[in-house]
Structures are given as structure tokens and as C-alpha cells.
Image 1 (cartoon, rainbow, N blue to C red):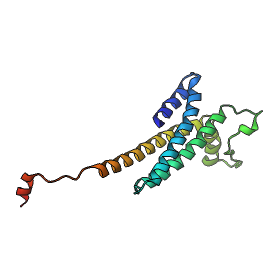
Image 2 (spheres, helix red, strand yellow; image 1 turned 45 degrees about the vertical axis):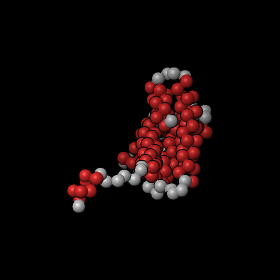
Image 3 (cartoon, rainbow, N blue to C red; image 1 turned 90 degrees about the vertical axis):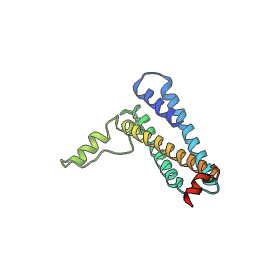
Image 4 (cartoon, helix red, strand yellow; image 1 turned 45 degrees about the horizontal axis):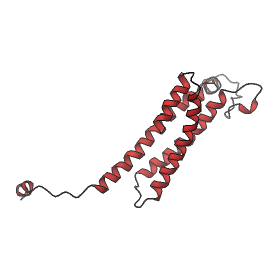
Length: 160
């Protein structure tokens, strides 16, 4: 589902298709529901795979950041002086001293495409964490279901 979300995000950013932003927004809700369901399934299972819990926590953190960035990226499309409610939450620096930090903050962070540009790699990280959780779970299921193997008779003779 996250892969579809990344593809729809690319369509939203690089094409003029009217369905792309709508589907990108709708599948964001589906991804959140999938992460919630996966979290309940993992945390409710016994025995709980301990290696997956930190990755699952990172997945939740990145998901929250991604939702915030997506919301801010969406709102910057409608920002105007007539709509002060749609101004970004990160305010420009009032420090008038010359220097890189305040110039960087005001010119880069408040550029209209900044949130959209940061939203893209965070989406890739979210996708990678989702794959990592699935691989951890797949590995733990495969190891648990693997039948116990017996050594080959030829190898027992060599070992003796």
C-alpha cells in the first residue's frame, strides 16, 4: 500500500491528472489504517518478536512526521495573504543579523516547495521501514515454521 502511495505522490507532483491528489490523500488514510492494524497484530502476538518493536516505533514516528509534512505541503498550495490560517506553523526568523542560519531559515524553509520536497524522502523512509517490519515478521514466521532437520547419514559417519 505504501508503494502505491509513493507512486500516487509522484503522479501528484509531476502530472496534471485530477485524480492523483485525491487518490494520494485517500490512500494516506489506508496506510494509517494498515500501520495501526499491523501494530495491533504485532504487539498482540505471543511471543512478540522483540527485534521488530523498535522498528515499529520508528515507523510510527516517521508516519506522524509524514502526515504533518503532507498536511503542510497540501496547505501551501492554498496559501495567500487573504488566508492567514494557511500560513506555515514554522514562523520566519525575526533575527535581522546577517548570517547563514537566519537567511537559510527564511529563504529555504519558507520556500513554497520546501515542505513538499521534504515530504518526498520521508515517504521513502516510511516505505523502507514498512518493508523492514514485514521482513522481520516474515523471517520470524519462516524460522518458527521451519521443520527440524536431521543430519544426513553420510555426514554422521564422517563426523564420527
